[in-house]
Length: 66
Image (cartoon, rainbow, N blue to C red; front, side, top):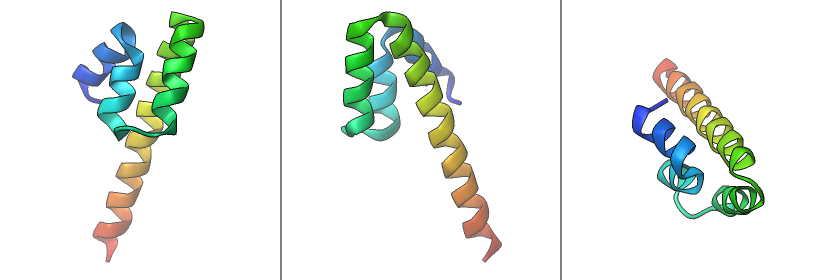
């Protein structure tokens, strides 16, 4: 996980999600959760960044296998 995205995930969760995937449904979920409460927004942003990084790593491993 990129340190800059982690810092943004704690300070401004929607910005961290935007940096990870751009404008997407995850961004709108992050905005909604951050408006409901700051902590749910942080949890979602960190979870989303981690899962996206895992998927990208798995894709890279499969691609390199061929």
